[in-house]
Structures are given as C-alpha cells and as structure tokens.
Image 1 (cartoon, one colour):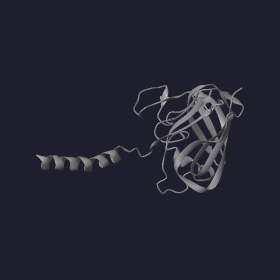
Image 2 (image 1 turned 90 degrees about the vertical axis):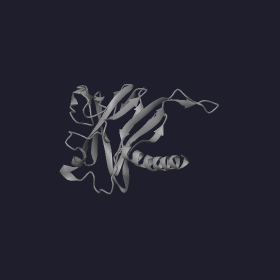
Image 3 (image 1 turned 45 degrees about the horizontal axis):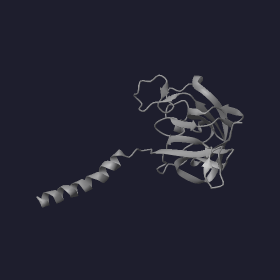
Image 4 (image 1 turned 45 degrees about the vertical axis):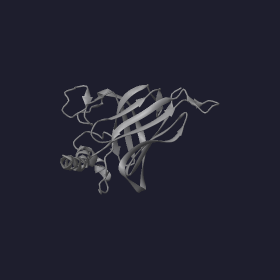
Length: 205
C-alpha cells in the first residue's frame, strides 16, 4: 500500500508543473496602480487619495525585433486585423479612476473606461472609451469588445496625444506604469520594445 501511495505522490508531483505550464497565458495579465490627491498626516498615514488603475494583457517579444516597424506601416503588426491597438493583449485594456482627471486639458470623469491607441511614428493618439469588455471573443455582447475588434469611435470619451520616443533599451514585455508622480498627477507611460509613449495627467480642479 505504501509503495502505491509513494508512486501516486511521485506521479502527482510530476503532473503539477506540466498542468500549471499548460494553463499559463501566452500574454500574462498586468496591473499598474497609483494614488493621487491625498496627503500624509503627522503620523505618516496617507489620507484622502483616489486610486488610478490600469488592467491589461502583457505581450512578450520572444526574440522579435522591430515590433512597431517604421514609416507608413508603423504599428500595423500589432493590430492583427483590428482598426487600432488595444494597448495590450487578449482582453481590452481597462482604465479606472476614482477621481476626475485631466488629459491634455480635457476632463475625464471618475469611472471606468477602455483604452485604445492609434499609432503613428513619433505620436500616438490615446483614446478613452465607454466600450465594455468581453470576457471571451465569443461573448455575444453588442456593447462590449474583445481587444479592439469591432471598435468604432461612437463611444469615445476623450482623445489625447502621447509623445513617443525611441530608446536604446528594449522592454521584452509590455509595461504600463505611472511615472514622475506627485500628489497632483504625473505621466501615464507605456513601454514596449524600444518605444516609450507618455502623456501627462492631473487631478482635475
């Protein structure tokens, strides 16, 4: 009996890593978060801040070079038949803010939005949209999207320009992050391969 149990345990231990590897997504999920608008009290406790969050899929280069291309075809390789980029992989990228913000002088009310980008070399257009998010490509929801497939601009909330720079260091996996942050705002930064796109934002007054 003990021999059978030992064999079963050995088989179980062998199977677990294979099973976990099989379940690993080709593009894992990622999240970026920050807090704005608050302050620290005399005891060092942070109070009154609001969360700003981005949830997205994180594609990996896997040895590919020049993902974005150049010239008239810049960014086309990321679209895979969609009209613009979902700013990630798999499910549509989601942006949530607990307070009103401004991007390029435009007010974005507190709430949840989907994020997209129109890509041009040296300048991207960042789009905040009210499209919902499908949990699978087959979900029959006319008010939601999988990635950017089926996107049109009728649900755009604001559009704003992002500055784009080519850097000498390549990010293997897509990174969305908040940089140069103060309590009044900072930059939303997107880095993949050798392209780094930024747009400043502030807490709305």
